Image (cartoon, rainbow, N blue to C red; front, side, top):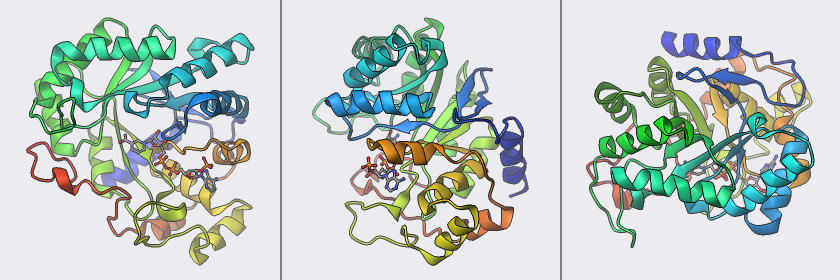
Length: 322
Ligand SMILES: NC(=O)c1ccc[n+]([C@@H]2O[C@H](COP(=O)([O-])OP(=O)(O)OC[C@H]3O[C@@H](n4cnc5c(N)ncnc54)[C@H](OP(=O)(O)O)[C@@H]3O)[C@@H](O)[C@H]2O)c1
């Protein structure tokens, strides 16, 4: 716990929380800067996604999170081309993250897969390339058993070729990250995992921080927003505890949950394709929660994921054990 508090405090100490609409940055273990709020994009596509990128950059977002499996890299690339052509930003002002899908885990498949993502995005590098899952699959989705250490060598190749400025993982547990660190040249810079009030992942977040790995929090709203899963635990958007905290700061409960993740030293990646909600989700840098409020929100934890990964639980690289 002490280590976690220290890591979170270190994370918070290095950015100015009163700065304007553009999200502050923190430093990765390879020395590069990463904005501490990302735009989630899963489920958005086509002209709507292109428009979303325009609205998001206007609102101050500089970090965009996608993946080859989202099938929206081309639309995001068009949005990026728009905002650069409009003079809103230069390429180097943006931080673009994408992910390697499970069926390209052989070392010699990694760089070609990234080049395909880059072609769709219309970019010559991404800022961050992540292994989406430690578990590999065949093209038809059935399990395969490629060791993620082999995949990681391909990620190192991508970084050395300048195609990915930083490299990391997603959905890995601490033992898997430690195994990469112990057996590789370059440590992962990031682990992108599900974190929200009903699934706080305190041990995993603390372990990542102690290994120098920055945590990105996906599905940050947890069960505050409708999910496919029928049994939604608290908190939901009208939860009285969250409403009380939100009223104190003149914010919404969704904003409180994003700020909670920032206080915990995680980088939330909220998804919205709605102009007003995009603006609201980045309007979280003019207040801070108290440690007591953070602890109160953490008490909602019931270790409940919004996803059901049970079909994979007998795989040797199944990560959801922590
Ligand atoms: N690495 C992985 O395995 C992994 C897995 C899942 C997700 N991700 C990443 O994380 C991102 C976020 O996760 P997610 O999309 O699952 O969930 P999320 O961001 O927690 O929630 C998205 C939902 O919340 C709604 N919403 C957004 N802002 C809101 C607000 N201020 N008030 C009320 N509702 C709001 C959105 O609708 P509108 O669009 O209509 O606003 C959408 O239905 C993904 O898009 C993806 O980039 C990564």
